[in-house]
Length: 386
Image 1 (cartoon, rainbow, N blue to C red):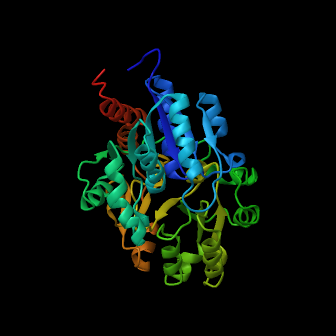
Image 2: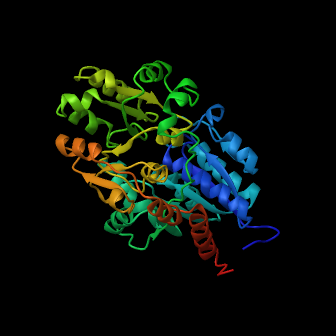
Image 3: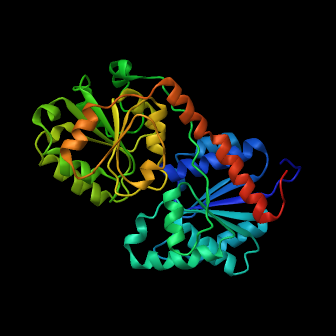
């Protein structure tokens, strides 16, 4: 669907970091802009505009982006800004991502927002808090369309009284494979160009010939890093002596990261556990590693395992619905509490074949995701099929 004045979409998110949620909404925005079907813009209501890692991408795509920091608690100024943007920009749809953004979008709609509300829920890790469990039974009622990236997430929404959520898998960019495992030495010589922790990178550089186990993702409770540490001491010393574990990803809570680092230092062979921090080149880490491991307690539709698979890595994943829903080849599913099982899966991991990679790339095409969201937008606006 193309028109002289395509409908405008405001993509609403709390932050613009380097996680999977942020990657997905950037891909949605750039895909919409490229197809000229809808006119997207982004509002990150609690993000330092000086630390927007997506600025260059958005400027290149000519997508307006507003980022600002708010104070603690519910912000009336954020609600006011949403309503101002809707009026001044003639926004027809506000598309929220995850619960916090949904709360703002729903409240703005309640106060006479005059727009349709589309919501995508990427995770339910927050259900450990009573407040959030209550919110998840209230605020989705105000959405005109609910979207989940996986069947397991849709099942959770159904248990909360919302069985009609649509499933739209997150689209994936084909990873940058300028460097592969055989190029690891040359890649290490480039240094920490992705903003990684320099001291950890230097230490890793001195040990580059050994097995690299990549644990890539946001460092947070339930995301698997703590599970890996719990198993490390129970793995064979010979296995540990040949293995470097790379924790790559920004922390949600710096204090939690500090606790994990202190715990890692106390473990046998703890010097082989490397905390690289966030990186602007995750696909390069995938390219030069040997195996991707995620021992998460819960996932919605995680991007990192799909990207790692497309980079040719074998996967060792905790046996949870969010991982099984991915349907990825060369995957070993493990109990996140069994050290021997995880170790054997890492040692026996085999890379996917070329035909398997082609099928995964087809399944997670960016264009398919964008087209699916276009259909949702048309449906809520009553535009029909075009």
